[in-house]
Image (cartoon, rainbow, N blue to C red; front, top):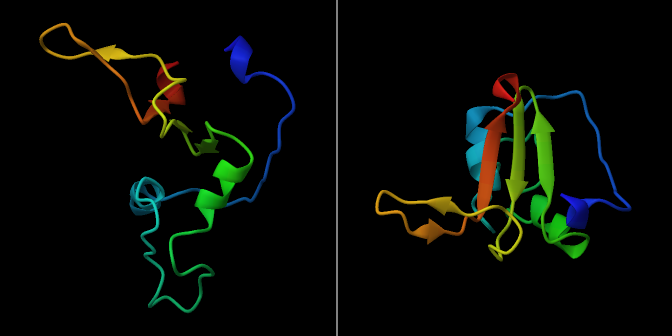
Length: 98
């Protein structure tokens, strides 16, 4: 965690992500709001701009804490069923269980 501490940029709104919105965040460059005229953003680029500021953006919404690590260099590795270490591109934690 020490490597992740330092200056931070935080954005806030009072909405909570739906499951569909969490899944959309995981798809780089894939917009899902094209037909919904009440939403801004259309090409799947909005959240991706966070990568201009950090290599490991995180999101807190509802009971979820999500870390994205597309370079698979910062998050802890997990073991597969055979005991091999596997790098992760991201991880979602349920904060109720932490």
